[in-house]
Length: 389
Image (tube, rainbow, N blue to C red):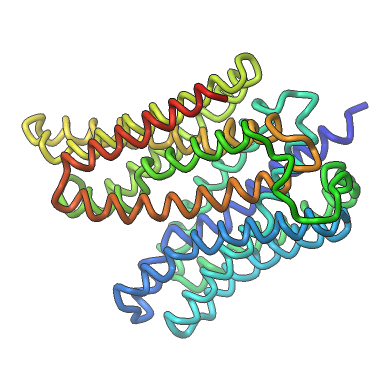
């Protein structure tokens, strides 16, 4: 008989696949939709700020889960997060102004923030038998399949019927996702990690290794260039057209999906040493971006290949964030501290990545050599901290 934990693990993967279809599909045209509703350039920045909002809510949900010590309350927060996402994105079909559309995009990020660290707690528990690295890798692979299918669905519906039909079509995978998470709740009502917590919010017991790990995460996310920076400067420098920039992002997503399971299996064999891959791949992608404008001598095809290589390394780094870096938290911390650990990880990752994107925006505009030095310094220091784990 198949273990219940394996069934729950598979269902959680399907939840992520269908949920990603919804929000990645809607976000793929977010800027264009807001602009079409009359939004000023600042509107795109407001929508983009939703990522930081989401990471703040990740910490909030972890605090709530640690305080309540109740599986019922835990699942209530998880379901609320998914429900907000699955309702907000199809509702874009009825947005009559850019302000309301921006509100829905912000609400979706808040919902994602509420449920993500708590879902990771469950993934960590139910993947113990197959190996946490492999478990998070398989989960990320399914997640990325949804991230690829969602934008394709929206593009097809847009070309045939327009925005309203495109957003309404997302209600179907959204409803499936909510049904699947309800099934998970019924099959796995008691979450051991939450019920073992002490009923109070405390940073005690996280330990030195966790804080060294967080330091490495901060430096890594400071040096890991945000895709918003990448896409902006590829167009600003005239290296690629809009469609080709979108294609390069698809390369990144495919690299993320391709690396997810192998890197998870490697993590289960060699442990935390696999974390070195993230700062090294991030450094490669950052340096390729920084020096791309000076590579015009390679010709059009050469520049394209360089950009696609950069995108592939960017996807590898993102794959590390979503697999082995999540799995390592469960191995560094005891079960009763995992919810808080995932919340802290999400918060510092989101804040430092936002700060890093601002720094890159300033440096890439005029000071490309300084940008290269900045990338090298932050990411090599991140690798050094990994060596201390």
